[in-house]
Image (cartoon, rainbow, N blue to C red):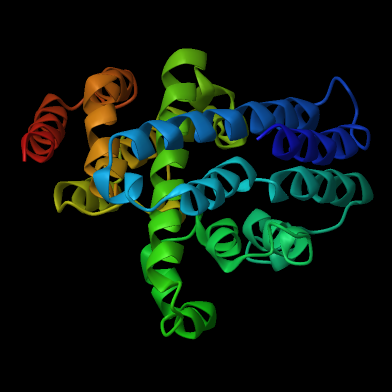
Length: 276
């Protein structure tokens, strides 16, 4: 994958030249480059421990590794666009494709062989969306009858799982949760607010916590815990368990949410899921 790494670094370097070296944007670019390598590492681990993927052959493995490595390639240009928008006082539309790294990455690689393969492109475009959004998309309807449909979805699931595990690794090993933009932008009153009722109820119902529902940093922590409900491959859930990410996040949650009964319920729900 030497050539792939060189190309990814080219996208990173081009973006890094367009933002101040001492800025939050440069720090984010550095993190996203390291994150891309970590997603590849986590994805390879899942591949090695998932027989159904092991049996797919070398072509599938090569496509999967490219999707893992380039899944966030749109983040580099996305950060440059956000930097320029803020510098120019331009309003950033939250749902705009202009600032959607999945869309940007898809468009960047769409006309670039050998990455212009839907088995790669679909993962780039949709890995950051909920499965409900994916199923409702025109692109999903277009690929459903493709002979490559199973490969496309297997690689998407792999990227989604590896992406989550890489983010959990960064949170535990590099305190990334308290160094991201969500944390930095929260005023103290909201930062230290308890779990919101909607987020707590969604987690206890065994559902993925959605970004749009987050109201506090405690909500953000519980969102990461809820990823246990969204893993596609048993190997990913096993890594979550082995690395003790649940315990780590529960300990962090207790620093921001001080209701022992809630914490006990959340811990019990997590334990029940992991034991299944």
